[in-house]
Image (tube, rainbow, N blue to C red; front, side, top):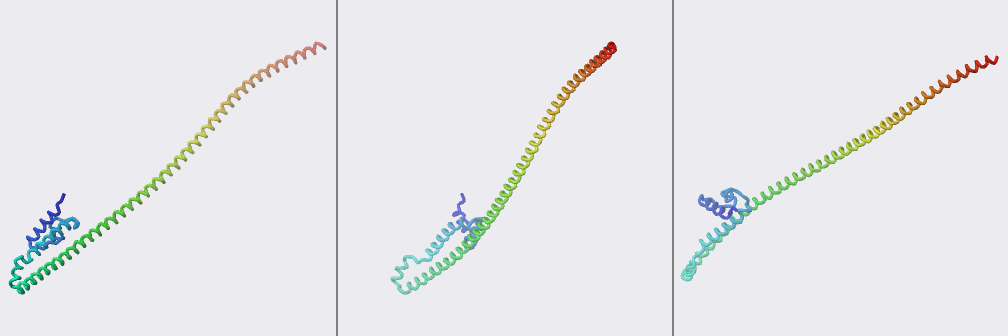
Length: 218
């Protein structure tokens, strides 16, 4: 886990050694970059400690009270000068704090703007993916409907083919029956022809016998 407090201390020390005034932006740059949200808290803590140390260094020592009792107005004047210097130091630090705060605020605004842009880009990507998914589902539905229509057409053709085959089988059966019937009729006809020929022969014989009988009677 990264110790940002240590990184801030190292960065500020390096800046001070180079004679540069530490700011959040310079500290982040010196430390290798990163979000101001990560460097901000430890930098503000370091800055408050430094302000307190500078003010403490400029405060009058306790012995000044004793001197004040002895020399009165002169010491009072010196104390006023010292107070003004402290006020000036505090004012200067407050101005520095304000500038750094505004810099941090601008960094946060920039990051917020970048986050909003990334969010909008992600939303657009999501919308594109959603539309692509909807199109794919619609295409799949069309394909399913086409496949279903084709299946129904194939089943219809198959049913028609089955019906045609059944009709052909029925016709074939009928033809077979007719062929059998024709053979039976031919057989009957052959028998009838034989019987007719025999009847004709018999009639011819009877006619001859009648003819001969009539000659005998004469």
